[in-house]
Length: 342
Image 1 (cartoon, one colour):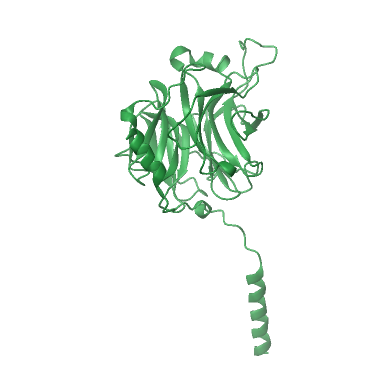
Image 2 (spheres, helix red, strand yellow; image 1 turned 90 degrees about the vertical axis):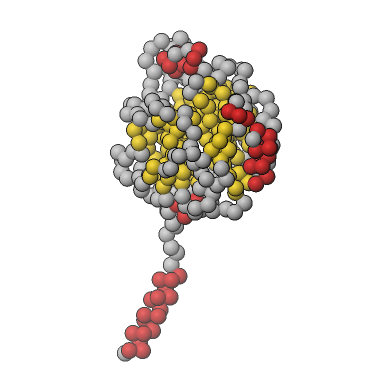
């Protein structure tokens, strides 16, 4: 009998060990402790100056940055309104991985208009610059991405969509009745829109990506965690706070909010931007723009299954940086940027 029981136990253990395990939903999926990465490039605008500024990190210190080009703008747009906000720098992916970078941004100089007018008859295009080395950034182009019923296109950003093998570009818009051609009436809530592109020149017809009506939402940022796992950060413009959602079933999968349906990261902030740490596996760095105060402030988390964010040391983090983005750098790119604009 003892031998029979032992055989049963061995057989049960073998069956259990052969069963498929559930995929991990921890941030282990997003490991980026990579010895080839030596620093970060931050791309921002300043509240008083709607141009694009570059900031280079002090090595792999994720929150220690100094302005390049002695604090002068790297890019000053001439098309559209002549001003650019909310710049997002995007690593090339697919066939362009390691070969191309894009910078996109909002076409808006608020000094030439009002917040009301900018949402009624604002620009319907996005600024685009592209580069093969992050040094030579070429000429700007302004690409219309929305239809005429939209009031504006704000805070564009992009992420590679593996299901389409194209870039998914997203932005915030609000819409007016087709009969209200002058946009004098009441629009709907601001929603997140998207289109796909392979070259940031031609885009698919825009569609709605996230609709939280009657709440308005803006400033979407998406962070890849794994092959099919993503975190996204959004500002609730009605309630004035930033929250996070997570999907382990793709960009168009099921999104849930860690911490519960009413969980938020912080109030009184906007322009969230998250990036993986170069040296600590599973650590996520997050910037939140205190738009009524001194601009971006840094936070960290090592658990994106919870609403668990810690204030980071901002001793060497510049003040008054506004809604922007950060990418990791290999040594050749880090050295090239420092040599060009150090």
